[in-house]
Length: 355
Ligand code: SDX
Image (cartoon, rainbow, N blue to C red; front, side, top):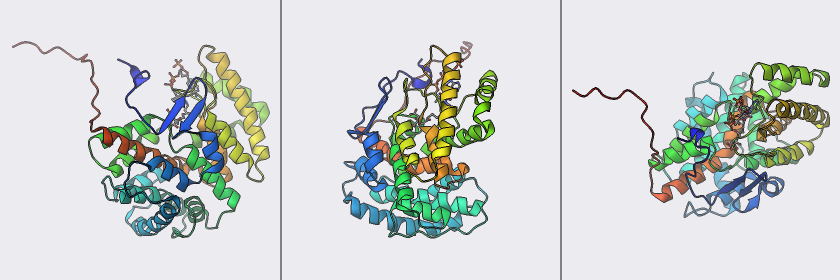
């Protein structure tokens, strides 16, 4: 039995490759650093969905279809109970959508991510949800619906860089979950809702919010070592560090760090975070000399989303708005194999007493 399926190859995929030894992430043949620096959300949606939907339009038309889908799904916001945290608000909203394997279904899922997440944030703040502006890009409209103001080009570009960077990452827990659900032909909405449920966990996509909590609790550079040693002494896991696959630095960490640095007024926060990161890596190396625990995607994710004015309680839902591209592409890839996912188990229970 391979706990955590660590050494099990469960699928062949054309979507992404996570090279844990060399710290490289390739998405559809492109290094993630290139995608993060040059691609918008719409480009990456087109890149990942290619080959899985016959009637996939070109990037420009796809952007327009996403805009009109955002406008359509906004009508569903009033059917979602207020008072839910962002992940449950998004999950409940997604559950209202059609559930099949069509391009229309996946467009509405991708469009509904920002609409429902932004609405949840506004309702949490006691403010009315803001209707989409289909003429804007997905990232620009996402920030506009969440903050009430049209973002600068640099802000929209920074959110694009984030959503693109986290769009796909091999068979991580939430993507594998989405593939399992898709393999029963349950539909893309079911696969996305299942993926979101897996992503919610603090060991997976729930990590970026607690990264900021850690940075805030440490407070000053002088406190870093003592705070970290105490946390490790309690057996706490430090959010934003370690990875099942990467044995060196997660390449997405620097891609996102570069995106934060391109935003004005972030240098002080980044310098403080760098100091904490260095202290954490030193303490982890001391405590686990034989286990390479490096910075993962979530550490600089936290700084980027914070710099964009996104509340930390919404970080996981924003992660899902990027990863839904990977979940749905993998779901379609799994469907194309025609195989239901059904591994075996070793029975360790009581042996039946023969009559
Ligand atoms: C994501 O898989 C993916 O691709 C995921 C992801 C994606 O794009 O989909 O990259 C996104 O989930 C990134 C990870 C976000 N999570 C966190 O930052 C939470 C903190 N990290 C850990 O909980 C942990 O590193 C995991 C869950 C990410 C990986 O866990 P593993 O591979 O199962 O490692 P492990 O639990 O076997 O740890 C080995 C040892 C353990 O010590 P012992 O129990 O053997 O004494 O290292 C310790 C762990 O306690 N350890 C940590 C640690 N990570 C591992 N100790 C302190 N802080 C940490 N962050």
